[in-house]
Length: 262
Image 1 (tube, rainbow, N blue to C red):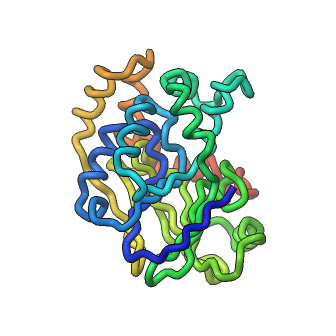
Image 2: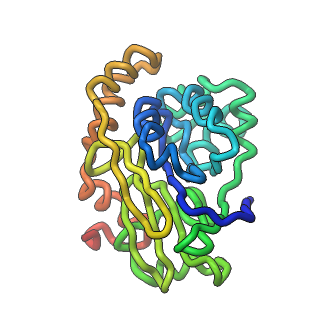
């Protein structure tokens, strides 16, 4: 399901992979360039984490300025709640699914997988979670050009920029004349801590918002009933996973051998 927005805007703040971490989201929403953006685009995996309901409710307060997309983790929560699956790969997923109300589940179920929006200076921009054709497909900053040709095969020729998330690591690169942008993760960063996001228009500006992670970890421990929340929050909010570790683990998933990561 694709949503085409008949609008050209000057500034777009892109927030991806919030993963139910409200303190990180609040830090990004406090940024002047986010508060002043014409649109805020959420490129999926909004909810699968410690505070899914609170994150949805906070974002819905922003009204129609927000363009919502579903990610694979959001889809998994919906499928679990609707009895379409009996488990979720991410250990915190079942907790997150059960923390949502039926209204939250219905809201997530209705989200599109992709959207297009005109951004001044960048032309027609397609937003997705993982790739334009699949919500959990892996492409990386150093994926070969033939891999990009494959995942872009069905795109309209007038899409000049693709913005994706899913891998939790920010980058900008060209692939077959298209600009590819990954803003990184707001709530579960890999490689370095902070809440990562991106400002589009007229160019691309990768941003990271530092916040008090120790205080945020303590808040999650206090407010979230997930049994392993202390360990979860310490690992993800402090970005214990390095970029090298993640690239090595994910390289085989984009069709290469593990030794091809660089």
